[in-house]
Image (tube, rainbow, N blue to C red):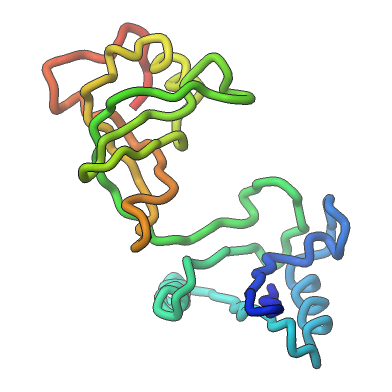
Length: 193
């Protein structure tokens, strides 16, 4: 909702963050937006981020293109009647540009935390550089790939990423292994993509 400027930095605020408490807030989005506008009024250091209600896919596409043309990463789509939730939910969605590419699987990194004992990331060769893809895998895929690593080394893997001029690929997300490009079959029991 707000951009706050201070000491040469710009800080982006997505929401009121439940009006300074970190938890659920049943106040609808459109009411929280009004509080933000009231807080930002007459303060030079805090600038509200533009918000629009879009009713058609054409309006959404125009707003999205405008945001990208103005150097923003994309949009956060919110249901105007949604409460604030401190976790991921279907009430908010990010809309960012992505591209699809393929990289050669060269190795694997172990999982940490909830992924301990299974795949954390695939290590890929992409356009002459090493990149890691750790997002987008199901729990089943993580277990099977970790248990059968040799079956996946040398395969091409398709992934989605956000373009970024500073680095080759940002925020890689697994799409599928390209079994169709080799004369091999997935390991027995593998139900992944």
